[in-house]
Image (cartoon, rainbow, N blue to C red; front, top):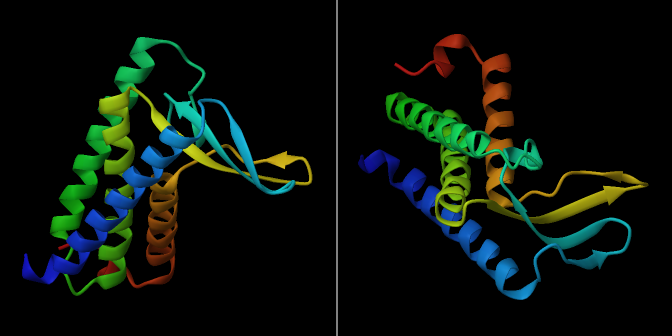
Amino acid sequence: MKKRVFSFILIAALLILDQISKALIAGNIALNSSIEVIPNFFHLVHVRNKGAIFGFFSQSANTWVFILLTLASFAALGLVVFYFFKTPPREKFLTLALSLILAGALGNLIDRVIRGSVIDFLDFSVKGWHWPSFNMADSCITVGALLLVFLFLFKRSSTCSPS
């Protein structure tokens, strides 16, 4: 456990920043409103996502979709926690990737359970192409997943598999 102190601090710090950023958005921007930060590129918005990452399934009003997504979130979180503790602390990049995914998954799961939806607030567009709104937790999950893919593709298999 002592060797994982940095990981626990990182997870806690990212989780706290995620929740603070969502609370600031909820407290300062009306629901479904937008503030232009960089014209034609970046807006702060306040939208509620009942679906998955980047708004997938967010338009579904079906209670079963919400329940299944919440259960899937718990299952995925359990799997990541399992691999986090199975990964040797010497595997720093793998531990970092799993820590990022854990922080993001926890941040969005807290929203889903407490608020019934996830607050998304980062909104980018370039030349008419619009990326779905997202939040800091989504960013952590995405960066962690990309790091995992990189590690699995470009590292020897013995250095990436938890023992």
